[in-house]
Length: 188
Image (cartoon, rainbow, N blue to C red):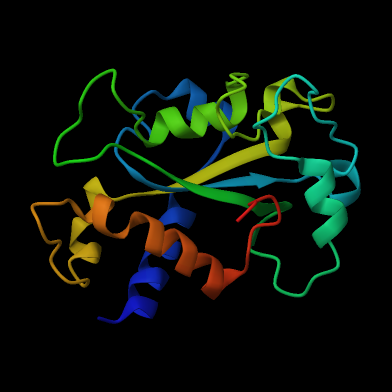
């Protein structure tokens, strides 16, 4: 299967798809597929510890708590681009072979939720609604399954008419963390 090679290829492509959040928001063509995404910041752990939770939003990621518990651990992801480092990753996309409008979020929708969704039912970073949010401190990157199926074909063919995303997104997201370090703000 060569999972390490697949993860290396995914990591290489996600670094090529690195954008400031402003650039990403201003280009609606970016991230329209499904895949894995990464959230980056140039804030230090000390600055992130000052990020307060919204007491009315029970599902948001507890940034301050996670930084305090983990900042001294050895296997925190330390991938950097300039002054930015990976602090979170996740998956976003639709099930099946085709998009079902209004029934699921694509990669772009899920990335935007991390920054701009204040829905208390959604477990997001909820960054815009935090006390110290400045859009210039954040960046994203992503790997689009739809545009990179040639890489995914190194994995066994999905069964039961499932897509590569349905069959492998969770596994690849978790194994990327094992290979490259756990982003400090991921709860699991």
